[in-house]
Image (cartoon, rainbow, N blue to C red; front, side, top):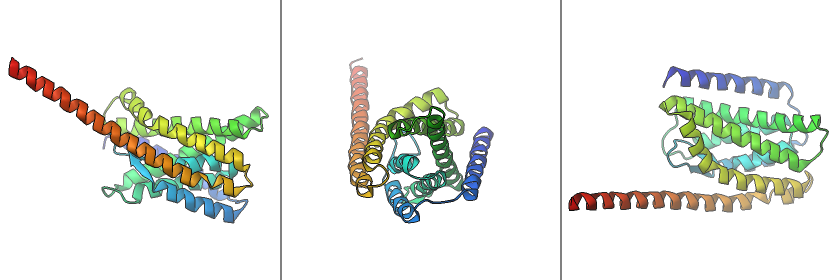
Length: 244
């Protein structure tokens, strides 16, 4: 692995340690039973993952629970949901045994993304004196998506020595529709529940399962269409060469 990639991962790990230190020093769950239930569901969602074509990485439905946690839980609880989801996503039923450095980066990446999204959404709304759950969800989702895709694209760019301007748009193209659907589901669940009706809020679980199945089929269909297109181009090239 190139030295720049190692340095970048080390910086991310240091930032994650700093965030977790703050979490440990300020740990004060408002409702521990609700947190444990939500954490367990978020881990279940983290196991529903999809491998992106052309990337050695996956996305899962855990980001929906992270967005809901930003609106309904404390900073420490939200960060732990992000970290736990990253570890489950990295280690659960993988095609190949992940390297420790990959698990380290994934955990650090989601920890930092979750912390920054939480801090930004809450701080900006407080500065503007706004008390809007919708605005908090939108801002948190935007920050999370940009940071997550950017950080992952940067490590791929450094590790594989590929231009960032080539990697990031490709990663964003595959993940944005998924994030968009998930953010909409998270916003509706949080707004409908208002933090008190947990039956309504937890309805996000079956809804996100159907989103997961649909998007997985979408990716498979896109890959098959791409293979078919390449095959037709090759056949046309061979036919042209034969005529020549």
